[in-house]
Structure formats: structure tokens, C-alpha cells
Length: 258
Image 1 (cartoon, rainbow, N blue to C red):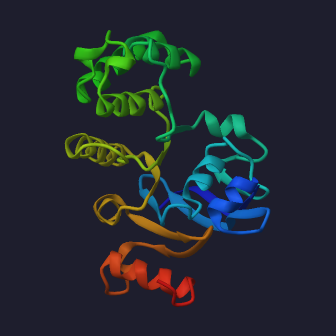
Image 2 (cartoon, rainbow, N blue to C red):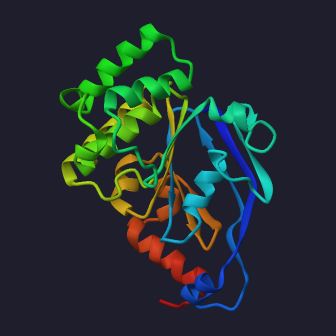
Image 3 (cartoon, rainbow, N blue to C red):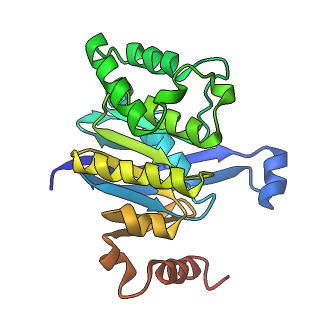
């Protein structure tokens, strides 16, 4: 398969405030969020980062999407380095995080057009893509409804649509089904499979075992900022269920602690 993403030695450390130190239960001023992470992803596959909250998944995706700079290491995405060519990377990716907040007083129509212009999508293509994607996600009936009056699920679907206005080759999703009802979550996961079928590459983070089992071609397990295992499910699970294998790995990394 054709490699589209190579991550080599990504690391990121943050300085903790006194309040954060108290929450973390530590006297250390520095926290290593990501520690020498390396993996690859191929064109046309879904690659999942699986780990508990605080494992470093979101920080990793933020570095891949050029929102934050790594302290060391690099990631080359379709020929562009996140360190030396962040603008090039941004033109090739769509990035969705649960922290993306849409302005309450804008409508789906306005937001789709605005972000399309931002990505310099030709006007004739904008209208065709908007019609197709609004119909697919059921946004068409709410196209002129202000964001503040949309349901949580509709806001999430709109966020996905907006992140894909420029038809990117690589799609980075941080917890794509987090907080969604079962129907909206199913719509999102079905669409991710459709995108893979179109040859798109999807990098997602999650702590949900069933999501990995249903969607991912390969998975990397990340614990305390380190990638402990990486491969397809058969390689990672070694004859066990994914959940049982994950907790076995977790206990090994924690020195037997529960």
C-alpha cells in the first residue's frame, strides 16, 4: 500500500500550572504529553489511535494538524512536513475536534460558503458539494437555521461537513462520535467508511473499543504518550478480544497497577 503519513519521534511537553499540578497529583512542573511517537498510515485506510483519556491522543492529532508544534520529531503528510511546511499540510487535511465551536448566529449555508472561500474552492463546485453533503447529513432542511437553534447532533454533523468542504485527502478526527446519540454516531461512522471507499485516509483517536473494531484497518495503542503496539487487529490482539488485550497492555505499562 502507498504510505501517505510517516510520523517519526514526535514529542511534546507542557508546563503545568499549580492548579494542574494539584489535579495531576504531582509536584513536577513539566508533563510529557507525547513521548517519541512513531507510526505510518497508508492511503485509503482508517488508522486509529486507541488510549485512555490523557494518553496523548489529542496532542498527537493537534501536532499532525499543525495546531501546535512538536518539541522534537516530525510528521510528513503526503510529502509535506508539519515542521517545515505547515501551510502545505493544512491544504491537504480536514481536522475535526470536539472542541470546534461554531458561532451561534451563523447558519449552515453561510458557514459552508465561508469555509469554502477560505479554502479557495471554485464556486460551481461549492454548490454541488453543499447540496450533496447537506442532503447526506440531513442539514438541507436546516440550512438557514442559526447554529444556536440546532441540536447537538446536527451541530456535530455540520462540523464534519465544514471540515470537509475542500475534499481533503487526509481526514483527522479527534473522538468523532463523542457525545453523539446512537443514530448520529451511526451516520458519522457510515460516512467515514464511505470516505475510505473513496480512497481517503482517516486518522482518528478514540477510547471506544467497538469503534476501532468496526472501522479501523490498523490501530496504535498509546499509553502515557508512548505508542506501545501498532498493527492490524489480529497483530495487536494476539488472539484476545481488543478490550482484554488493551487492559493487559495497560497493566504491563503501569507495572501491574489497576
